[in-house]
Image (cartoon, rainbow, N blue to C red; front, top):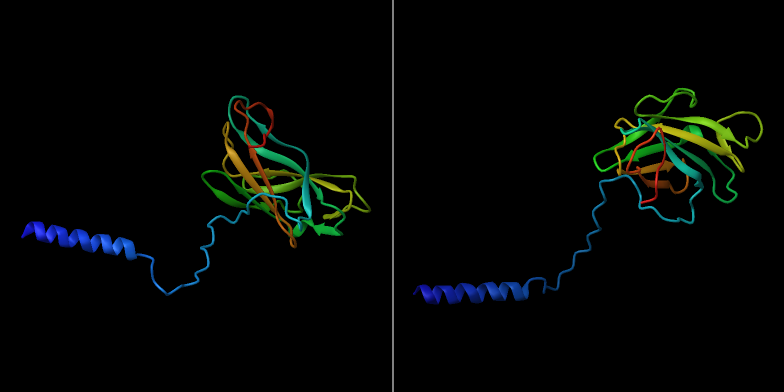
Length: 183
């Protein structure tokens, strides 16, 4: 009797496997949203910001990188971007954090903050609007320092248009001044 039961169960299992997914009903379920707020890097046609020059980091030789600096400007000839409405998100393998601007947007950022170091090619009177030909040098200070070979992503979100995604890797040996490499 056990041999008959074994053959019956095997046959039922084979039939279940063969008929799985063979039904006339179709449910159109949208894909689950990702947990990360960061977008996949790429060249989006509506990007209004772009980076210029190197992404650098200040650190402790043989130790870690504390602050990261990069330069942004307008892509093509977009009118302007209100830097006071900018959102910056930092992510590494362990954490994702939204960085806050320092008061007045200029100053030395403590951990978890960002600031505007300077404006290059400034047009008109000083303000916090990024205009054509201007470049803003931004420094971020994430809560946790970068270790050697750590991959990071920085998302710069203007109030309108697509985000600018910057993805870099810390060098294998940390110096006082470091250039973060492309992954």
